[in-house]
Image (cartoon, rainbow, N blue to C red; front, side, top):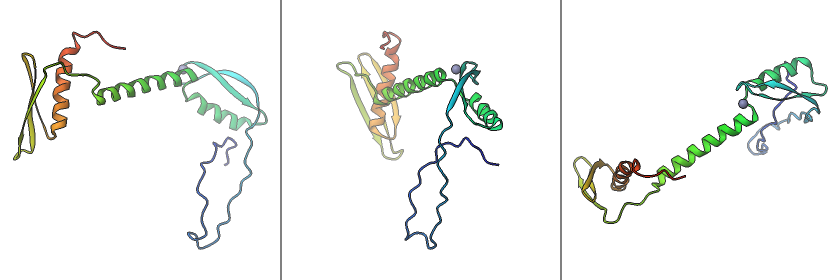
Length: 162
Ligand SMILES: [Zn+2]
């Protein structure tokens, strides 16, 4: 059984003569023009919101029904936008976290000692009266972790930044 509603085909690199021994006969299918939209119907998406479902001119009922079933399983436009917004802000938050967007206070002091047997660094970050200790395989990682530990300890006192 064939479907009338076909998503645009992915462009494949044209086969070169050197790679194929037998000349390929390309299955040239006439590119179907999208059927014109006659009207739209308000219908409910999976998220529970109503959206405009397009009724296509000359589409067989069977295909239209199937297309509508697929359409219903998708989120509405505003829910997609909202999901994208949430994902992007979460990604930005992760980026910020990775970049360690903070500065240690004046006078902060690192000390680190390498254990060749255990192949790891043990270090301390002193900020005023407070010392943070940690152990890591890499010295940079160690400094980052210690900095983050300090950061965590100060976060409660700080007013959140936008
Ligand atoms: Zn929605």
